[in-house]
Each structure stands twice: as C-alpha cells, then as structure tokens.
Length: 204
Image: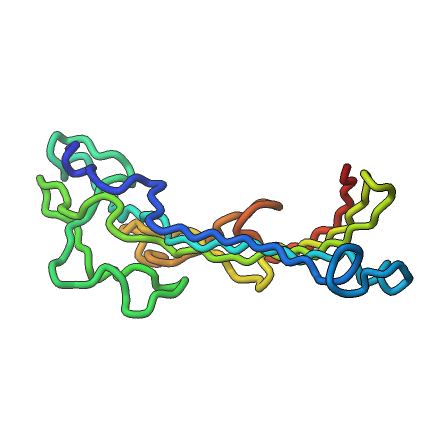
C-alpha cells in the first residue's frame, strides 16, 4: 500500500534554531581596559567567552501494531510495520507529554481482519532537543605571530536530559509511549549528558 506510506520522512525536523556568539572581554592589549603592559594585563587580558545554542523540534514517530499474515490484505504482514486504526476525535498525544506517557494509546485500535490500518505513517513527533554549550578561552602571546590558547569547554551546560524516541508498538502495551533511551548514548556529540573538556591550541 504505497499510498498509505506517503508521509513525512523519518529524518524530517521542521524547525531548527542555531545561535553562536563570541564575546571578547575588554581587557588587555588593544582593548579598552588594562591595555598597558603589566602583570594585571597578563592575568586579565586575552579572555574570550563563546557559546553555541541549538534547538530543534522532534523527529517523526511511526505508530505500529503486530498483525498476523492472515489478518491483512494479501496475506503477508511485515513484522512491527503494520499500522493501527486511528480513533477519530481522540488526541494522538496526552495533554501533558512526559517520558513515561508520550503517546495516547486510546487514540488507536487494531484494524479489522482483512483491512489495513488507516493511521498514516509517522503520524506523531518525538521529543525536541535544546542544548547550550559554552567555552572560556585565554590567549597568551608567544611572539607577534604565534600564540597559545587555553580552553575550557562545557557541552550541555544545563545537563538537560535529551530524550530519544518513544516506544510506538501498540502490541507492547506495557511500555507503549514510554521513552527508554536518550538521543545520543555515545561518548561525544550533541545530546549527551554534560561534559567538560580542557584543551590547548597553538595559534599562528
């Protein structure tokens, strides 16, 4: 049923907002304050604060139901890929979505034998993501052309939980609509828990 599969792509993110900013503290050589040589300029000069903010809406979620071969037209059912019927007038999501209740199970029902479900593919969206990263850096001049930059970077500054997709198989009622994963379960990248990184760069 190709017509039944016409829907948003699995990687469709409708809204994305990215922001970046760099603020050079006004102390040190060539800046409004403490521009004269000395120990104070050495300590307080050359600092830079930068930040990156990201926010996006969630990825589509495909609600499915397990059905036997004999219950669908053509006699062949692809495991975990059949879709249920939508119960008109019932909202797809609860009034307040949370990780333990993201999809409203009452909105769906198992189709009658011999019919496909009328729910479209990717009918609901998963959790969005927003994250703030900051960095504090200090540049120390070695020569006129070469400098060393010391950096402290914090990713996911507010340590916000970045939830993954909810379980969307109606045939597993015990955890239907429940989120049990995070966006990124790896060691690096967007969506991890708060991470602090120290680094040194040579600028030339």
